[in-house]
Amino acid sequence: MLAGRKTGPLFLTDRMARLSVARDDVDPTTGRARLSYRRAAELFEAHTDHYDDGPYTLHQLRHSRLTHSAEDGASTPVLMKLSGHTSVRSLAKYARVSDNETATSRGGGIARAADARRLIHASSCRAG
Image 1: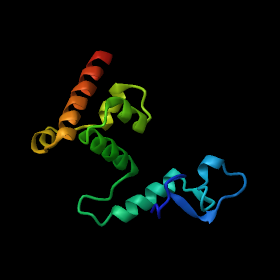
Image 2: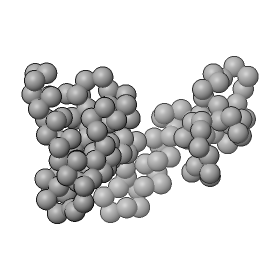
Image 3: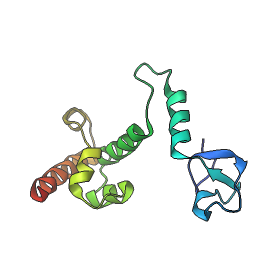
Image 4: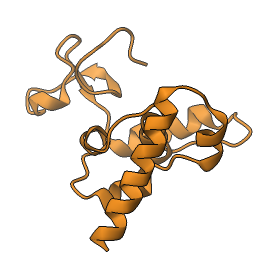
């Protein structure tokens, strides 16, 4: 999917971008345009349909990324930056560290994740 790319859009069309396409929607290396969200979602679901609990959605991918980052010990400001959220309350809907993961995993990352989870919970209570 990424083929070694480190910048530009994640999901690309097979064609070169037209001149009218915004620069941020074009991969600087290949010149290919970003896929529409709808088309990227269709392809993602079609390619994850064979999993027992599939198909997956791009929205689930977003939740997964934030949850794994929280479990790995990412701070609340980092999670907010990754998600684009400006409210800790809305972030708490996305980054949910399970009690099971916190209890069964080892290492400082999980301890920090538990702290981050408590911070997210406390902040969301204050915001409400």
